[in-house]
Length: 295
Image 1 (cartoon, rainbow, N blue to C red):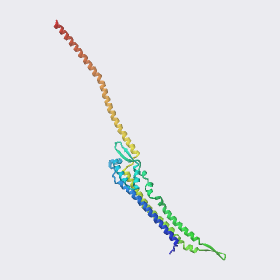
Image 2 (image 1 turned 90 degrees about the vertical axis):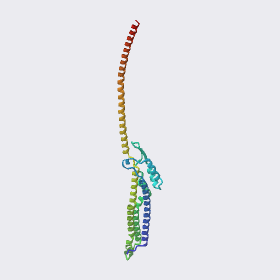
Image 3 (image 1 turned 120 degrees about the vertical axis):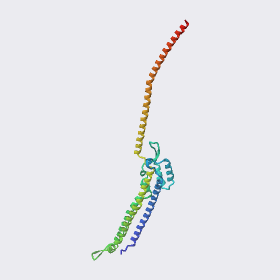
Image 4 (image 1 turned 135 degrees about the vertical axis):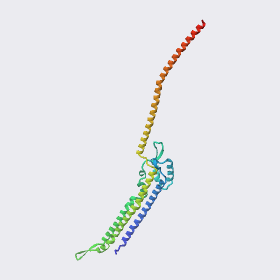
């Protein structure tokens, strides 16, 4: 059985204590960030978005007020994340005149992962912890070997050089590598917990939050605006074409009326002239009759 010196045991115990402290701290931060992401995501998913043919439309302004009142009552950091989304909500009136609410950009650009989960979970630091643990284990091993090497000295007896202390160095060399083995084992265990438990859970919760936000409040895109502008232009072109047809028909009626009025005036003048001639003839006949009666 390997006899491990007491200083090495104390150093390994300190390495294990450091591992436990960092592990507990990492689990606490990841659990807090995971709960916060899940809370805001569940609130956004509780509101039913539009479905069917209305899915292309945005969020109704009345429903947005309900979402705002619910999210502003949430604890931190959920309220801060919602304020970031709310500041990017824009009102857009489509070609049909309906007013809806959209996000000015995608939720991923508004709620960046490094500013959401990274602010409450120091992932970059915990990714460096395995290297720290392995480095400390190797450092303890080298320190132990260095201390053992200081016990070596050369003695000269009868012109013969003899190395004194080599036995203790070789016998205790196996025990001096215990700290390196423990450091490497703890670093591997920490990597597995950090990757599979903390980082994976937070990544899934973050993606679920983005999906819930994009389903409830879709982002308005330049392609959508361009298509709406084309639809509005086509509708206005059709209205102008219909209006042009009506104006052309009216002008045609006016031109026909303008052509018929002179003809009617000429006919009326001819009738008036014929009536005047007849009236004059009747007047002459009547005068002749009166003269005859006098005679």
